[in-house]
Length: 336
Image 1 (spheres, helix red, strand yellow):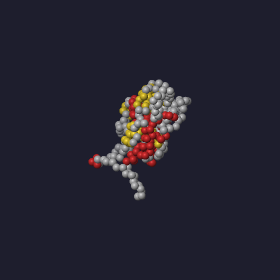
Image 2 (cartoon, rainbow, N blue to C red):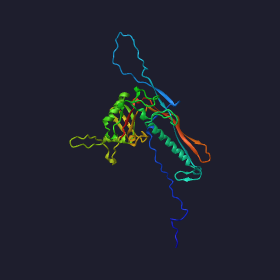
Image 3 (cartoon, rainbow, N blue to C red):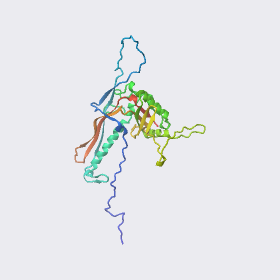
Image 4 (tube, rainbow, N blue to C red):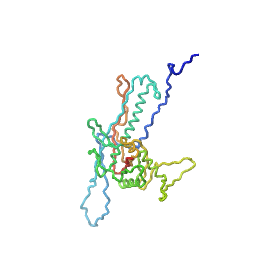
């Protein structure tokens, strides 16, 4: 008796799951932690910054009249930043939107799904820009306006964009920037950075450390025991843990040091255009009172005219990153 072979029979339906697997974009800690500043009203926006004079221990004669005066505004400067426009555009074929029943999407939902995805991508674009080494830039020819990323704000030398370069008195001290390879990073080096930040801030503060994966592992490594040679005493750190949980917790999320407290947040969007090793080793010590985003246009969805080929649209935003005083921040900027 003849049988119908599965290999040649016509009309078999495709078996496609309705589950759409979409890799999560990851956390955006800087975007989430930043305060939202006043709306920039120009492509170049500015804010004043000042610092206290060094303390004086000199006395005053009992019969001395006031004969000299200080200019309490002598150290005032203007810091400046630029805005940047970001955009994600998308279009959906007319038949895809109207006819196709896409797995994990459904009929007549392709445009909405594309819009939702683009809105998430805009958020990660902004996070990557904030965490980048981009300097601010004036629009010229094919080069668009750029806002300055934290990698350039937290810098001990002058920035290339001279119109917005941080004045020398408010640049991050070199001692607040560590370039030690993460595999060789020690607690002593971390304490030195925090000490430098403390000397500028003149207060023990709670900071957020936005860090790459390698830098986070380096901090966690501070609680491990290193094996030494037989002639050298090994430094051992112990910690207590409830054994009833039947698990070992080996992670540092908060580092409490002599000169400040660091809350660690892992990010995969730091130094975004640099080599992978640089991204993983990067870290920013941030006082979030000093870092803010100003939105001239918050992320929005705009649908364009359908000219017959299908629905089209874009999401965009206009924003600028402001650092109130770069001198009180810190950075880990190893290349490995």
